[in-house]
Amino acid sequence: MYTETKGNTAQGRYEQCETQRELFLERARDSAKLTLPTLIPDNDYTNSTKYKTPYQGIGARGVNNLASKLLLSLLPPNAPFFRLKMDDFVIKEIEGDENLKTSIEEGLSQIERAIMTDIDVMADRVAIFEALKHLIVAGNVLLFVGENGIRVFPLSRYAVKRDPSGNVMEIITKECLSPNALPEEIRNEVIENLKGDEKTVDIFTHIHRVKDKFKIFQEVKGMPIPKTQGSFPVDKSPYIPLRFNRVDGEDYGRGYVEEYYGDLKSLEGLTRAIVEGSAAASKVLFMVAPNGTTRARKLAESPNGAIIEGSSNDVSVLQVNKFADFRIAYDTMNRIETRLQLAFLLNSSIQRNAERVTASEIRFMAEDLEQALGGIYSILSQEFQLPFVMRKMAMMEKNKKLPALPKSGVRPSIVTGLEALGRGNDKNRLVSFLQTLAETLGAETIAKYINVTDAVSRLATSEGIDPKGLVRSEQELQAEMQAQQQAAQQQQLEQVAGQVAGKVAGNIPPKSLGESLQQLENQIGQ
Image (spheres, rainbow, N blue to C red):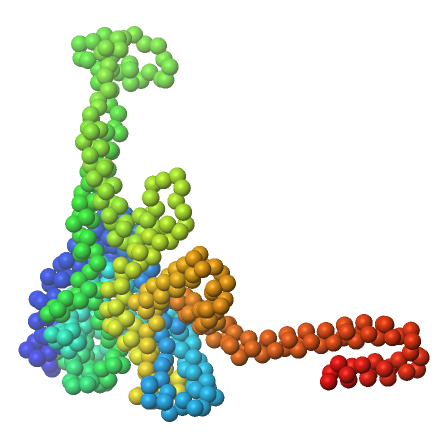
C-alpha cells in the first residue's frame, strides 16, 4: 500500500505554484467571459459547465480575427516560415566550390519542404490556432509537441517557473484521466484506493531543468508512474510554454485582451443596457381611462378596422420616453466599438465613412495596423517559432524522416512574422525610390543607372518569394543577348545573300549559280 504525501511530490509542487498563478488565472477568466467563455471556464473538469453568453460580439470577433492574422503570419501555408542557414565558417570552406554550395542549398531546401509537409500532415495549425486564442485572451498557454500531434494546455492546467531572464526552469501539468488508462503496474492499486464516488484521478507531470537538460517524470496520487522518467535537451523540449507579453520578474505573461479589458467591460454594460431597454421600449401597452366611455374588453376583442363606441381621449399608449438617454449610450458604445475594432485589426475599422475610399488608402492603413504587431512577432518568433521548428527537426531525425544535420554547421532562421514586416518596409522604400527616380529624372535613368535584375530580386524577396529559378541571372541574360545577336547576323546574312543572288542570277549560267552563291557567302563570312 502507498502513503499519499504532498511534501516533495509533483502534486505538492503544483499546489505551491497555484497560489502564484491564481492572480493571472482570475484575470484570464474575466477576459474570457467578455470574449470566448469556452476557452477558460470556471471549472475545467466538468462537461456540464454553463457558459454565460456576452451581450456584445466584438470581443469574440476580434480574438478570432487577430488569431487568424497571427496564424497566417507565423505559419504561412504556401512557404516555409524558416530557412536553414549554414554558419559563416562552413560558407568560407566551400566558397570556391559552387557545385557543392548549390547541392547543399538544394538539400537544405528539401529538408525545409519535408518539415512543412509534416506540419500539414499532422494538422498542427489547428492546435496552434487554438493556442493563439488562448494567448490573446489569457496571455499564457502550454504546447506539448509530441509524436501524435500538438496538445494545448490552458493556463488552468499547468504551472511554470522562470528565472529572472525569462528562461523556463520548471513546468508542472495536471491532467484528469480515468484509472483504466493507467499502466497495469499501478492501475489496480489506484482503483482500490479511490475515495467515495471518485471516478477519475489527477495525473501530474513534472519537468525541471538541470543544467542544459530537462528531466521529467509523472505521478498519480503520490506514486511515480513506471517508464515515465526521462530527460531531453533544453533546445529540443516537447513542452513549449508561451507568453503573449513579457513582464520582467513574472513567471506568466499578460494577455492582449487584458490591455483593453476596460473598453470591453464598458461595451458589455452599455450593450446590455441598450438591449434590455430596447426590449422594454418595444412592448406595446394600451391604457384605457377607468371612468371613460370606452370599454377595455371591447377594444381588445375588436378586429382590425372594426367600428366601436368610445372616445379616443380615453385611450393612450405607454411610452418609455428614454430616446435621449439611449442616444447617449448608443454614441458612447459606437466610439468604444471603433476603438476595439482598431485594436483587434478588424477591416471595418480602417475604412472611413465616405462615398469614395481608395484601395491605396485602405492598404496603407492596413499595413500601418499590421506593423503595430511588431512586438508580438518578436516574442513569438523566439519563444514559439524557433523552439517549434527545433522540436520538429528532432522528432523527424529520430524517426529517420530527416538526415542527421551537424549541430554547429546548420541552424534555422525565422523568416516570417517580424522578419516579414522588415521585408515589407524594404519593399516600400525600394518602390518609393524607383518611383522618385522615374518621376524626376525619367524612366531612361532607371535603365541606365539601376541594376534591374537585382531590383527585381529584391522585390521578390520582400514579398517572401524565392527568386531562384524565377528571375533570370546576368549570365542567362548575356547568353540570351548573344544568341539574339547571332540570330540577327544570320538573318542579315541571308537577306544580303538573297539580294546579291537576285541581281546576278540573270548574268550567271544556271550550272554555276550554286557555286557563285557559295563563293558569295564565303566572302561575306570573311
